[in-house]
Image (cartoon, rainbow, N blue to C red):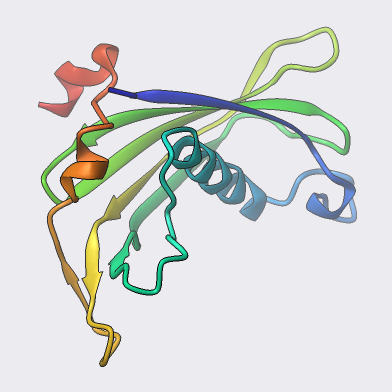
Amino acid sequence: MAHEYKLRKIVEFAETDTAGIVHFSNYFRYMEMTEHAFFRSLGLSIHPRDPKSTIGWPRIDAHCEFLGPLRFEDEIEVHLQIRKKSKRSLVYQFNIRKISGDKNKAVARGSIAVVCVARDPLSGNMKAAEIPDAISNKLAVAPELQKSAS
């Protein structure tokens, strides 16, 4: 069962503000981008294209602590770990590091909590649902985080 994933990317110019520093909102995009890549690595999708699929993953909590700036063309690594898993929700922990240049430096850490929901295809209403076995069976809490998940 998978419990972590690492994504590398180069900071794009459009992700920076007029001071040339990555805008804070992009750190949340980096975390979400890594979550999506993690699911794809398992043969899954956060938003399946199958019109019969009613499963969704709304965010119920998001947090980011900024430790240092990123700039255009910095190479970063976003490390996702599953911190908590219940029947209906997941909590991801993220560590973002700048890995280009002469330093391997932590620049942010955060978390995103998601809940599995089933959408009514007619009304569009969402209701919390158990994570389907086809997904749940592929996911585990990171071993080094299991004590904090209890």
